[in-house]
Length: 390
Image 1 (cartoon, rainbow, N blue to C red):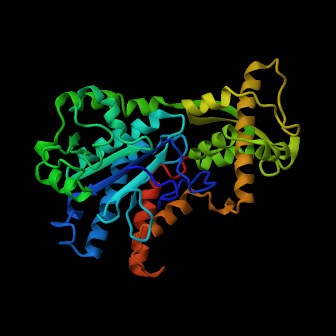
Image 2 (image 1 turned 120 degrees about the vertical axis):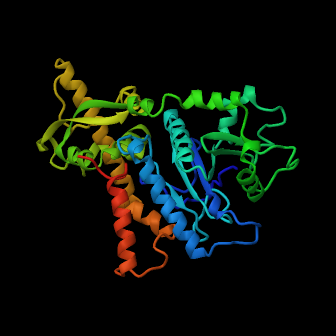
Image 3 (image 1 turned 90 degrees about the horizontal axis):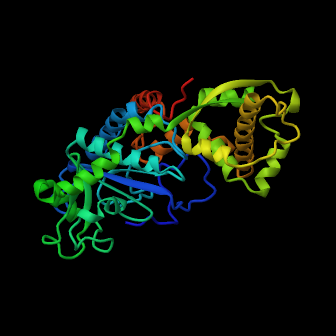
């Protein structure tokens, strides 16, 4: 299923959102629990409120299960999140069947995309009564990895609503059962009832398992620690929200003539010019981020203090720090210009996601049930990759 370039999901990135066009380098997923699939497309054996409650419970259980893998990981552009489908929110998959869904822009870091695949397979093992779809803007990318082992009839034109992850395996809805493109409901119902008949061949399973076999260790190795010299204000930002290094690198790497004007003035992160206190700190980032910072030549703004080049170590630390600081400055000023400077907090974005997904069920703020839901959300947030770690 192709993403609608004009849509915006209910779990939008906490980072740069100039518009709602979905970037090309994005992976999408939808999680369909068996309890959300009715006996017929028009029927429902579960009340809307009960189904919503079950989805909310599953939502938090999945996030808590994956938290040990995601809590310290630095994503290239945006953190891993899962949201509830909602008739009032634009979903990336059919909202007619209640489900959980998510998206993640991986940019130049393909490891992020395959880490998502690992997380989804792990989820399917931990919660066996789920059917999961995953695709990117190029389509069913798992088929590319298993191309030499697939039945001849299966190709991008015939794969719609046929490829799922379930109970730790890849499943293919057979053409013998549905000669034409099956509906999502038909495919989910069939897999749920005839799971052993849809499981792909061992060679297909092996091809996928080989691709994700190095995870989660590979994810840990992908995080690179670097010493940098930055203004104390930047050090404080990275201390309280380490994941925002993604914001800084994106601001620097995607800079243009307009945003470079902001870096020249450094009005936010170096308002005192050369009088600003500078500190050396250790920063975590992905290897792709490190490469993006190192590979580009960038002259420091005149107001930015730099050591002499003869002190090689100090200069390298200062140059990396300067690029990070300029990235923050450019992104901050751009967001301020667009009226978004007050919406950069990960907690605020997390709350917005919950509100749009219907998590609070229309309850009045301050009510006992509303407070209980807030406490559950706060508990997850504190244990998630969205929460800062000093």
